[in-house]
Amino acid sequence: MQLSSRLDLFNEPETLKMAKLGRELRAQGVDVIDLSLGEPDFDTPTHIKESLKRAVDENWSHYPPVAGYPELREAVCHKLKRDNGLDYKPEHILVSAGAKQSLANVVMAVVDKGDEVVIPTPYWVTYSEIVKLCEGNVVLVRTSVESGYKVSPEQLEAAITPATRLFMFSSPCNPSGSVYTAVELEALAAVFRRHPQMFILSDEIYEYIHFVGQHGSIARFEDLRDRVIILNGLSKGYAMTGYRLGWIAAHPAIVKACEKLQGQFTSGTNAVTQRGAITALTGDMTPTYDMNKEFGRRRARILELLHAIPGVQVAAPDGAFYVFPVVKHFFGTSDGVNEIRDADDLCMYLLNNAHVSTVTGRAFGEPDCIRLSFANSMGKIEAALERITRALSKLR
Image (cartoon, rainbow, N blue to C red):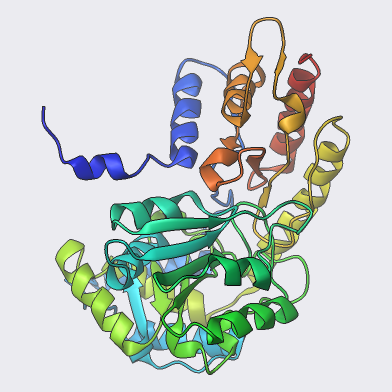
């Protein structure tokens, strides 16, 4: 069967692949602990659920505007002013079916065939694959655990060429949990000022999962704001992954371009979800803050357990709900049956022998690491790390 060659341009997300393998083992009766998916294990807050129910009863069941209901776009502007000190108007906002669609819209709107897109490692798995799908050229800039997995101004400057069209990064970062400080953002901004041909995509989906100081956006620099595209959504901060709603805040020309694309793909985002989103963005934030406190407790515990494993090197994440340990110590080892050549092998070994699902760092551009999510209960995290410790101790 002859299918499109476009399918050969990109790969299946490793995060979804590992979750799928874990589900298959679970279906066979195996007790698999999932540390692979980036999904809060909390329920959507009650006041948001009540607003979603009202939306059904009030018959919000017709086609919504492609860009989102005006009231929701206003609510996003309210959130940006309240939480980030940023002034935006509804014409700067586009609502989509999840932040992943927002990301795809942006890359399709600004990247032409052959354009270069600079991405510091580690990065969320979809960044590079969306660029490839749009026939852009991915330019990876390697960081390290020693640098806190953050790109330096010098590295950024060296990666930029006349063909560079877009810079993509997340802060807090998936998968490393790194957070750029105000001083670090200012240093990057100085580089961007020298290259006016570039757009900057700032993925801020984890802004409420933050353990050190306050979230800061690179959109704070007014002279760059027309070139900055903020990406955000409901999934992480409001435990609403299944409701599928994301948005961008950007120059109206970019918003209109993305609206044109979205009009051909999905049109407007789920009407009921949009009504719930208004409540989420303008209502009580206590459940979000409480969730972040619990993630902080889990962060401390998983770091304690990882530090106790010989051969594992891990930096404390300042945000998000992942740890990203360096595990190259185990490459070239074996338990007598399984050969561990790389992080891919190690993840499969942990899945099949420890029955814990993780994600290879190769998928995020850092092949010496694996990603573990602590978006699971404390009991599950402790049980998973006990299994991992036991399995790793068998490797020689």
